[in-house]
Image (cartoon, rainbow, N blue to C red; front, side, top):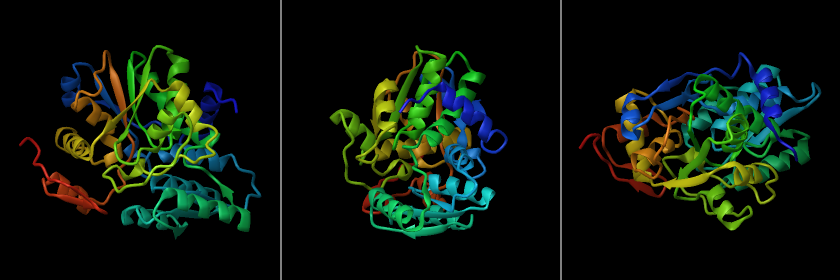
Length: 334
């Protein structure tokens, strides 16, 4: 399937005034660490607390008026975006999630009026339930990453970043199923072919990273993580986000749970920003020296929909337990 900047420009018109124009602000602390201007695209300021609203609005608003409703699988934020967009159109929404999704995200989706189905222990199992609903009830599935309308919506982030800072040399993109990374990379490289777009993800259960290394989509075990939004597979039948990431990303970098913890603390204590673990992987890559920008750089703070009790423990330097994972505490600045 052809996918280009034209699709992203069309999405910008669809989502205008609903899911666009979040702040793009400098981080003085991270700029000092990087030795370059380092900016934060604050998608955590979206009405649903995450960038996923862009793709969801573009996809849902593009459906015919007689569509009976929508369904999707989600690690949390996509489901919230789809629920919000479906409510705006007066459509039924059924969101399928695994038991690994934090309760705070489940509650947020239910508060938007969607039906939530908890299925299995992986996003792949939730995906199967979503597809069953399509066959059984005629609902329209909206993939969290492998849908051209979703990818185009996410790509509008790059339009805003480069519109504000045409001199950006590097964009660091949190990488999961690849919808965000694909959209951002296609848009950014169409505008400036020399820009570097680097996907950043956790080192536990990184499906897109494993798939890119294998040369084709593969399944990986799904693990609990501070960056829970980056969990889940990419689908063995992936037709769009995998080839777009393969062809347009310059590199993929992995960060550990401890590095994610440290970056969450940096973002909170230095920039006073509350964000999910998935939001800070770009910071983690620079803080650890795994990425060294050679010019102005930007990353996307993807969301704020997290368990605040867990967040408070991390900020206090206490141990954090997520599923079978224990992340040792560390007091910031110690």
